[in-house]
Amino acid sequence: MQMQESDCLVCGGKLYIDYYTFHLEQSIADPCPQCMGGPAPPESKWADVDKDGWLEFEDFDLIRADAYWDPGPLAGELEFIVLHRLGRGVWGSGPRYIQAPFEWVASGKMSENKRKRWNKAGRRTRKHKGLTQFLVPRYVGWHLTFHKPGWERLGTQHAPLDRMQWNAGHRLVNKLSVGCEYDAGPKGLKEPYHQDTINYSIGCFNLIKAIPKKRPPVLIYHSAICPETRRDPGPRYPGEEVSDATGLSLITDYKAFRKYLAERKS
Image (cartoon, rainbow, N blue to C red; front, side, top):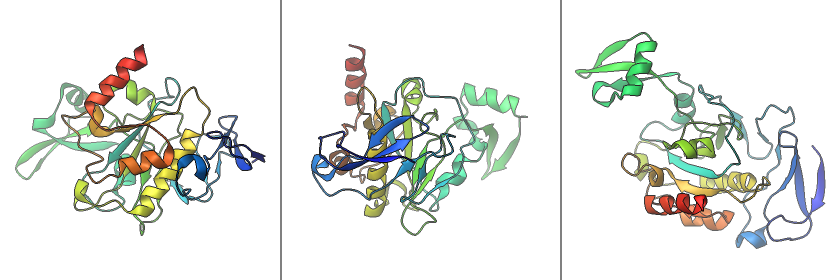
């Protein structure tokens, strides 16, 4: 990994370190505390030494757990960072969920696409609590999971950031996004977010932001994309804090999302 002194890419501050990313073949830099308007998140080094698209966070203690589903490369420049939160369950359930190739779906939730997948997968069913469930191949994923302190690590990466994961429930956003899940617990969306987890995710978002592109990505709630079916990351998520610390715009509702799409076309 090559390192050199450089100006901050955001505000022009002197003597910040550039990290050369072999996979992207571009030079990137962390924004400095001055341009973030607050204390800096944990320092980190971002490299892909073996050129396989997987990032090794030397200081972030990130581990790898491959997603089962790989739809292909992003369709253009990274434009969205989609913020999710897992539903109720045990801590650390995200990596186990994303690596499972199948899921049991209740009969009342069988869409036409899911039924087609079920037909191709062998038409297996079971009875659960008096209801018929269907074993359906799972085509969903995301890129990063952020964990509560005390779990094995604070973060897990599931896919390279230049490849799609069907995480958003919206065709365009799926093609141009990085999906980030915050681990929940027994209380689901009511579970408070731990500050160490938020700080860790801020550091990751700042690294993603530093990838040279025409414009920085926007942070967007999953509930802003699919308001009828999704409520995550939930009311306890400190969206303004994360937006202020990263300098990234934040979309929290469907109306703002539609406005963004309209302006994007103009």
